[in-house]
Image (cartoon, rainbow, N blue to C red; front, side, top):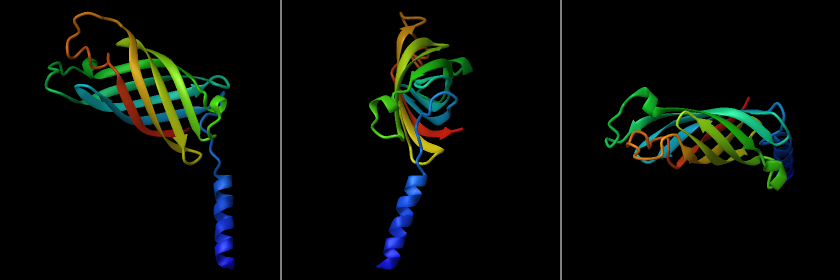
Length: 166
């Protein structure tokens, strides 16, 4: 019985000391890597966010499509690649669900379009967590008669993967 009590106290203390926080504000650094899922293709998404204020971060996001369906005949690098500058409003401390949870709506401007995203992060430890993002274009640079290749980065997409504090 005494041994079980000691183990229980150690577990509670270790959880208390492992208090991570999803977004700490100015100076915060996040790196995300994960899968990008969309119609006619799937690939890898990486992003970096830097905290510039209590609830604001700026960053870069890039996607490279590895698997492209046969419908898309253009196999060029610029068809598969997209790079975006992004702005996030980190609202985890505003909605106050859990200090390890952050939700962040944002805007992005990239090589293919101007769009928005809604993301969420949850940290299990001080340095590691998971994320998901939903992305959609608001304004495409070419809006009429898009080829199958041009639709690759001009549609609703989902990203999911791992997030790291740097």
